[in-house]
Amino acid sequence: MKRFSAIIMRDLRLAFRAGGGTWPSLVFFALIILDFALAIGPDIRLLSRIGAPLLWGSALFGVLVSIDRIFQADLEDGSLEILIATSEFLALTVLAKAIAHWLSVGLPLTLAAGALGLLVGLEGAAFGPLVVSLAIGTPALSLVAVLGAAVTASLKRAGVLASLLVAPFYTPVVIFGAQIANSGPGSGDTSLPALLILAAFTLFMLIIVPIAAAFALRFGQN
Amino acid sequence: MFDLANPEKFFALSRRLIPVMAALAVILFAAGLWYGLVASPADYQQGDSVRIMYVHVPAAWMALFCYTMMAVSSAAGFIWKHPLADISAKAAAPVGLVFTGLALGTGMIWGKPIWNTWWAWDARLTSVLVLFFLYAGYLALWEAIEDKARAAKLCAIMCIIGFINVPIIKFSVDWWYSLHQPASVFRAGGPSIDPSMLTPLFLMALAYQFLFFALLLIAIRNEWMRRRIARLERLEMRVMSELVAP
Image (cartoon, rainbow over all chains, first blue to last red; front, side, top):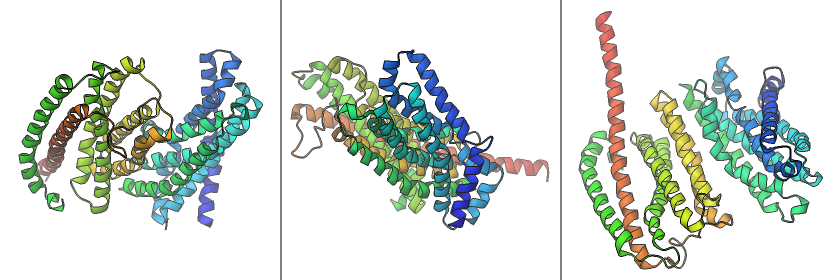
């Protein structure tokens, strides 16, 4: 347990400091929103209508650009080898990495989406569903990102490849996440089923990703 | 199946099987296409464009079948370390990619006269597109890793995890409200398609199946040869370097 929290604390410290993973993801997220707003035009009513799905899609990009940081630095300074060699249950170590990734990327993106919602003129009632859907969906995004990073950990410059591998798995998360985010009190439909399915997907990933990623890390070693 | 772990036995068997499978595929294609394009009736609503079904639907079935086979092969390679398992998973991937692309392409051609649109973001179309990307990612990962033994294991993980997408495709029709017609062949209470259309459909499905197995066996043999050549080249390099600098 001490080891578990030590890995999380170490990753968080690395992520928040200069050169860490949090800021690039957040800035990229904001830039994508800016680009979309520029491309769509300054029609705030249109932006407000498509704001929630727009934020969802852009948050996804924020996660994708963070993938190659998950194991890359650890691989380069040799700490990955030590982590693998000394782990009694490698899956737990992977889980710690995933939790750290969510705390340092998923959670900041969720909070930033609330702030960026102001820029696209999101209605007051839409903020709640947006933040809740991201809070439930981003853990799944982080977990799948860790899997992609683990599979490509032995490769040099695998950033694009990892995104390519991971993005298809994001479909259910985006579908149900955006559905929840779109179902503000005004739209009349209930988002509870979508919420439950999204939560189920996140929990499912919570079980299988650490195990699969642990296998991938061991196989990638030699 | 475990007997075939011996590559010599597999080679001897596949050498005899490939021509048989290929011949069956040709005969079934001829029969299925004749039946589908000439002998079967046009649909009372869709007219002659319903005949695209005989190319489209089996391709979509094969897209799913092929990925299922890859996942089973990957699991077999994982559990029993069967030497041909990971090769067969890899060999099936490009074939599956083409079947998936064919299903998407013919679906678009069919969609234009019937739905009056090339593409609809409906559940099943979207999930087949995702399947296409799964195939592409799998192949890209395989190409990116030099050491093929390592590539086999890592690709197997991705394939098995991706396999959870296949049931999502199959049942997406029921999960989401969709433009696509509900399942009409494999359903409780028997098929709802008329037998005059079902016959060419199944002929074509069998033709695709035999074509797939013929291509798969050829691809497995090629991959095996490719690895053997790579091994021999490495050996040659070593011998040469020893000759130059004893």
